[in-house]
Amino acid sequence: MSIRVLFFASLADITGIQEATLDAAEFSDIDSILSRFASEHPELRARRSTILFALNSEFARPESKVKDGDEIAFFPPVSGG
Amino acid sequence: MFQIVREPIEVAALRDSLVGPEDGAIVIFEGTVRNQSHGRRVRYLEYSAYEAMAKRKLEEIGNQARDQFAIHRIGIIHRLGRLEIGECSVVIAVTSAHRAAAFQACQFAIDAIKQGVPIWKKEVFEDGEIWIEGEA
Image 1 (tube, rainbow over the protein chains, first blue to last red):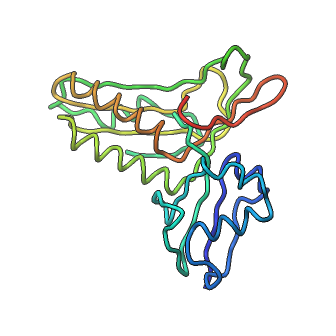
Image 2: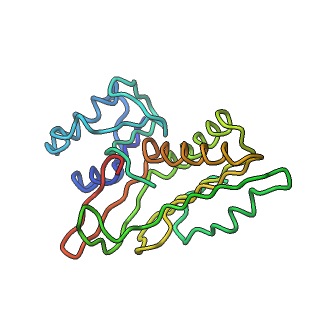
């Protein structure tokens, strides 16, 4: 019963986390997962409005529901090319 | 062909894999590493990505380009890791019967990459480094 959480680019630097595993039973949506990390890393809260979310490799929203086996990603606006 | 790679991109190989006898045009866009950013001298760039999602998004952009423009084939390769000045970070190749569609699809694809593919670049200067966030 776990959820895989990924951080990329500046968000990985801020949190010091690239990958984490959470107990799926404790979280209902993406926002609840972000809040869990923001409580330990206040800078995430400051950047809240710019953070993008993905659920199983597709763009998602803070209110998107999460379940066992999901992969959630948090990242800043993209800059490839 | 939609790939995320860590080695130098083989542009000619991509071209050869796409072009066919029914094509009248092939348009190739290469993004390259520039030596300055907002007046600061860039030493090199570091690209990173959410690779699984980035590859999916490149394929999606390819499908959209084929739906929207009268093209035959499209291929996109983006490179990750440390890239030196002048090196190629991304290549888009599009084939079509007539040139206009290939030009348009190529422009569409690079714009879409810059807006919605989870890849990030870090600019490394003599005296520091910064993540670029958002379309440059």
